[in-house]
Length: 323
Ligand code: SF4
Image (cartoon, rainbow, N blue to C red; front, top):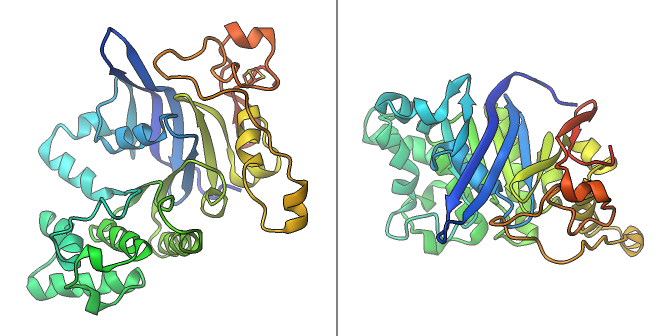
């Protein structure tokens, strides 16, 4: 069950369109609405190109929305960032962890300077010794040690680099972290370690996460609620256990059927649902239900009428004409 229903983030009718030449428009995010409650992890899942990362970057204010808005504790993020002071404070409270720990750390900076960058920008250390003490504490918090402070990113493994990225985000004591595919570049054995670290930090520091992923396998272990995106829209949103036990949307069922099972007997019985064809272009998405060109259960109405996201059961919303 979801513990706390007080919203930290409210996303309302968010749209982000990109003009891509020849008068064409790519509808990366098309009328998306959801809330993220204080202290929870909200998972946002979908295939590459479905708009989940653009949603995350628009929430952060890194990309300007075409329309709709994002509220952080009731304050408009896009307009709030127009005032220099508000912008700085919002950037402190909202941090990001990136997919590629190789690309997101400056190779010419020591780990100490990478982690302390935010501390310097926000004036969070009293003096050099205080700054160094904070860096040492952060390294230990993420499972590294103080000897790592003067090394450079190339001296670390992928999992260690992601830990450095997490320490950098934590350095400014944020309330909200967007983790954009933080484990997809890591070995499976390391993925669980990073997810467990993020869970521990959440419990200690009451951090709220938006956890973005392209499949449903690891998201279950960290998310309280999950939104499934397809071609710029949320097609199902549910409490995490409910989504895994009673998925309603045909696309959610496709994603769930793709997860390999650790138990060999269950794995042998797993029936993979393969959708027809490839994901269509968001430049010219299908009419009606955007999934109708691939859906095994499509009906005539699906070609012409776009289903609305409706509250079908407690903690479960779905956009499909079957319900
Ligand atoms: Fe499939 Fe129709 Fe439901 Fe879309 S609305 S997911 S095409 S059954």
